[in-house]
Length: 426
Image (cartoon, rainbow, N blue to C red; front, side, top):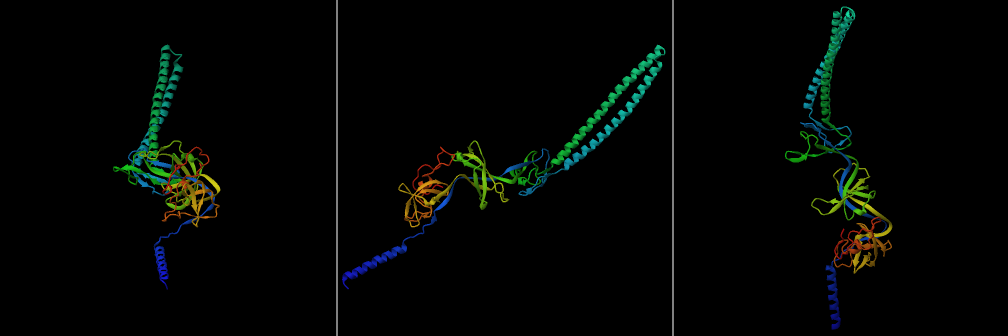
């Protein structure tokens, strides 16, 4: 074996060893892929808010002084119409009612006596007047002096009859007035007594409200002495639930009433509920007192019924702005920008230039470049190191080729400004 052969063997061994070691320590990673699909693309607007009942009734304390709660329906319990929600101490009202009922009986007795006296005296006066009339008839043809005396006695009887009858009538009317006053007091006390038992005017779930007590706000409970007219219990009707949400003033023009929506809740992962935009506020407002962001209030009715839905739950809703049928679409993470071109990478890492169309928060339409039966990469396979799905998927993914939803002409879509580099913005 000559020296050249030995040198060649050494070189080959060194190169082979280098490649083997390099292959051993070279990082490799698997590229996640996804199939291109064909179907409907929904253009949606994401909003967040809280679940509430479309109808609710606040139960307040009656306008009576000296109230004290002796019984309170359990919070979270379901009440039907007529069920007792709050019972107040009725000791004082019962005592006052008994006193006024006693007074009424006395006044009624007094009235009965006045009416009896009126009847007796009226008959006596009528008898006296009849006697005077008969005497006058007998003596009016007698001597002038006797006739005059009889006439005077008749006039006096008539005057006495009318005067005493008027007096007796006044006594009866006074007694009747006293009876009516006593009866009104009894009615008032009975009304107050009835108000001490507060019942549900509508069906719903019992929610205790906070009241001011002991120098701080806390939920109402048995033993409390609320102010007259103070709200104590909220009674939301759970038969129809809504989501009270807000949408930014930039996106508000896209949202209209009657648009369908899909509602999800943090407390019920995996559950989806059909909804519909019930109304949108006419005027914008500050998102909160310290914010400069303007928002519009949106009310979405939840059309599906579920007893698990409760007021106060955090909710999100995707309002369907528009829907495109029979389009080729890929996830946003599969579209990249390279040197001003919009591209995707097939599972064989081959680069394909595409033209994109409309998009939502998850998917984007491929207008040209794909047939719909390919598999594409979710990570740029040309990177030296693996990234996360969607890395460097910027301008094509968010903006290029975007069109306005139908009915929103003239509105510039969000994110229409050019960006370069970085992760996608949603």
